[in-house]
Amino acid sequence: MKFRRANWLTLIVLVGLIAYACIALLNMRTKVAEATETESELRRQVEEIQEENASLQYAIDHRDDEKTIEDIARDKLGLVLPDEKIFYDSGQ
Image (cartoon, rainbow, N blue to C red):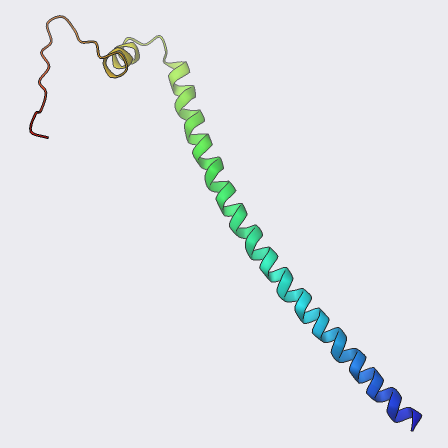
């Protein structure tokens, strides 16, 4: 009788451990999926920042070029050359 009771007790403990392991595994899979998503988002942010840094480095490296100065004067300051005519599209 004791032997049978021990078998049932062992079976119940094993089923409990297996259930606990399954629940822990599912929780871990969820955490891994969240971490993978976070990693993807961070990689995208790193790429954007690297592109911005490259653009800024280009601007620093070419700050004395006449073409760069002219582009800044046109785009940011709205300046034009003395003999240049500007046409505005009023159809929009």
